[in-house]
Amino acid sequence: MEPIPPDRGPGRVIILNGASSSGKSTLAKALQQTLDEPFLHVSSDHFVTSGMLPERSEEQGPFAWWREMRPRFFDGFHRCLPALATAGNDLIVEHIIEFPAWRASLARLLGGFDVFLVGVHCDLAEIDRRERERGDRRIGEGRCHVEVDGIHTFGPYDHEVDTSAGVSAAVVESVLSAWRSRGAWRVLTAGVPGGS
Image 1 (cartoon, rainbow, N blue to C red):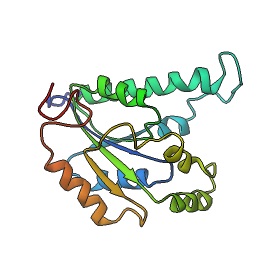
Image 2 (image 1 turned 180 degrees about the horizontal axis):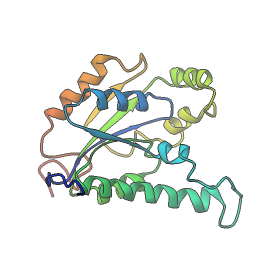
Image 3 (image 1 turned 135 degrees about the horizontal axis):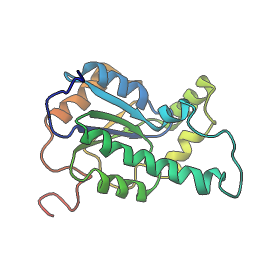
Image 4 (image 1 turned 60 degrees about the horizontal axis):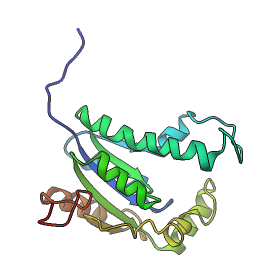
């Protein structure tokens, strides 16, 4: 017979927002290993590395990555999150919220869920160093996320961490402690504290 788990209601969502090479993946895995219940680690990078994207990319037309494929890809990625959470899965979402419209979209799509938004900050020189060391990232990509895209300027966070010195046990514990003591109001809900 097909196993049917008991209905536990919608899953909870922890979103880690930070530049490329800021330590989000390491933090997500550490949280996943430390939390008392199973959380799925979800990232757009997982989709990309699975090979789902076509290799063809052009400047114009239906294969134009920046104007055509990329916006649809990320819109679909954002829409996957409430689907997974509705099924009762707890999520750790590793993301780079590149545009104010993306944050607004996530707020709308996840409006009925328990969402905890964490800002992952890292010294830009350290991001540059990690990119050079990794060898699989465009040098300057992470710096661009912060200085050009302004990914940390679209609104407040529920909690913020600095991973310049790495993802230490103290950093992980600070996220867990803040998440466990979270109040009812979150930054991705509409309005202001005490408002509607």
